[in-house]
Length: 219
Image 1 (spheres, helix red, strand yellow):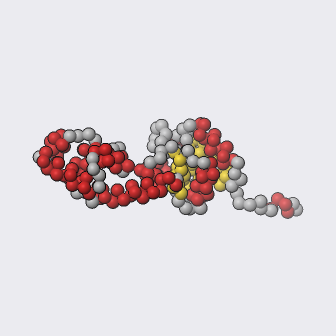
Image 2 (tube, rainbow, N blue to C red):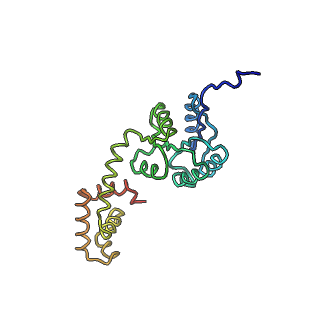
Image 3 (cartoon, rainbow, N blue to C red):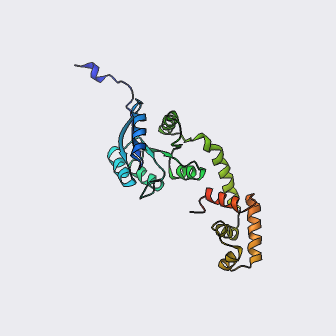
């Protein structure tokens, strides 16, 4: 009997699915991961339908996923992939250096969020963390995400009417237009606007727009 064939050479490599609509990016990530003995690229996909099929076929341990691709959106598909393969974990690899996108990705079920500008070793570290069931966030986004969460708490303190005014202000409506839409006087709109700015700690329209964009209020 050949006893050598029964000897273990270590844990099996983790299967990885790479999902990105740019072939150059997929090739780069594949080359990086195939140089690591602990990972094995099982498939690539350029869109979400193909990714769903690959998850069904390969049941990968990890999916490296771009946040924005043509066609079906990426983040809502994470939950669908988890239904197909509950043990699969997800790492978002993106060019979007914005805490709002990071928060949306984590809320959607991603275990990590890394920028495409990151050093190769950071992507490897992130994949190890996510594979171990830990969370990984690109370092430059950590403090900004915490700050964004604090702003979110401030948004929760707005009254329903103040929120209505905020949405219209950041979308470019004048006080007179807002008054007409909400059946209020212009003076009342001005009062709501002053109060919501005080609660949010902002001093003008530009800061209001930036805060609203960070929390998806311009979507």
